Length: 184
Image 1 (cartoon, rainbow, N blue to C red):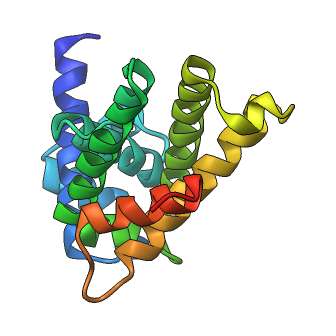
Image 2: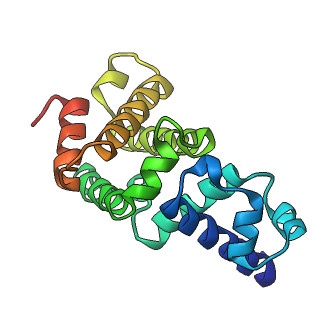
């Protein structure tokens, strides 16, 4: 990618992330983003079709920058390595809870929620294929099992973010793991 384009995208992503920490997503306009990023409106549209796609990209980038990218699960040779990755991801969600509550909550971004669920599904599929899974051995298609896991993980994350006070990331991941495996 052209370094200038990458720099502009980073400015836009930083701007939307900061704005999402401060205000309701429905109130954030392209003008707000471009003013915060110090770029013009046409520059925004050279890189993004809408604010929601920009937000989804910003969330992905922030997770990766925080070493909290769930895609790392796909590379885990040992199934026990899954839990620490999920804890890091949930810690990242907690650190930026205001942004994620707005992005994934009832008035949030369908693009961000769909992208998170899709990323979780791809990760679950890769993990299932690498390590096997009892439901797959029983004949359930990998895609169905992965969709169920992705929906559960996303659902737990969203419900946990809405809690006040919000329990620790370890507690939330423990709940999710118990839900998925039946093990406490």
